[in-house]
Length: 97
Length: 219
Image (cartoon, rainbow over all chains, first blue to last red; front, side, top):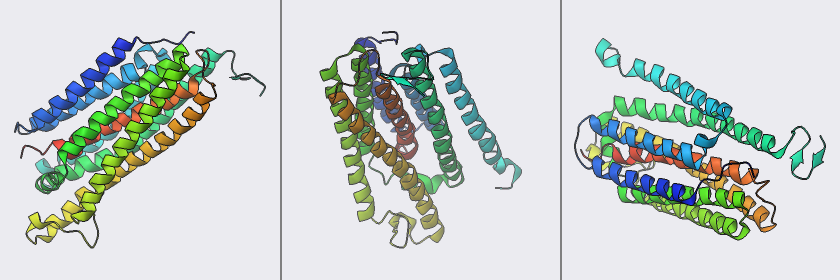
């Protein structure tokens, strides 16, 4: 058997981390932090997604070429989101909303 | 191509075959990320353009059901990861138990989603002629933008639910194969790549939950 078998306690630890982060994000959402609410919610979601990708989806133990595909996908997503939002989010400053 | 056992002729060994299958699944998942990415982008732009109405509409959702569903889906991802592990270690009974648990949790998620959708229909929050939004106090603009929120809500969660249904179909197929004893420590590629798909669907929900339910909760 050559594929990597991850210990049960690692999976259990990730499960509890994910549930803990879910409770945290719900709790933070009930407090008014202004624009920071969105930032914190998305940061926690990104952390949760990273844990799922690295451990449940085995990216941490995958060949480098698989990791390259994942990173390339992320990069392309950032182009999609970054370039479009840099247009829409700056329109109020130019008065062309 | 010739096939010997589970090894297809174009591969030198099962390791190479498994790595190719997993790479192919990741490439597919990247296209799915781009597909959902465009929808998330549409949501972000409209939320930025109509922040007050989107906050009002967002608070119509049941945040407790959303949070419960997030936990259900996370636990199902854990049971799926354990199913993949069981197939790697060759524990057939454990594999079947974890596949059934994952399927049941997926069913619970869809059941809760059904209850949420039913409540939206009941409260006339489905975009269309019957749409009612009393918070608007007769403001036509607010009603239109609230419909925009609910169109995105149903579009995003509906497509996510559709992916869950496809995932449930994959799990049922995995179960039939597992019951026949097809998966061994040497060959468990289908369990692994269906697992990747299931976790991906979980990740989409991990972002949908805060964006649709949470970020305007405090207002």
